Length: 130
Image (tube, rainbow, N blue to C red; front, side, top):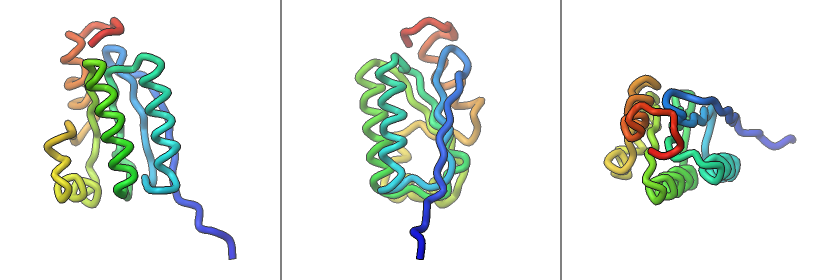
């Protein structure tokens, strides 16, 4: 019997005002969270202080995944940046609600609203500082 391989994929792309977008697909949990953690860490280390995490195609997230998101948010805030989540899954949104993290994260239903939020800190410029 072969092990079940979780569905998980990451991609990155630029966004408005120099923001950095990480698109996550599948499940974020104990076995996949380290990949997301590394990708976020690499982006922040490279100077990304305006981050959008597109979780539109995320089907499941556990406490390990939430911890990765919180760590990323804390690092971005320490650099006076902004991080927005794009999330539409009722299952994932319910987890944010149950844990009270819907008040901690800036969560948007679409990428345009998330872009506007992170770009607001930048004053619409494409310079490095928010």
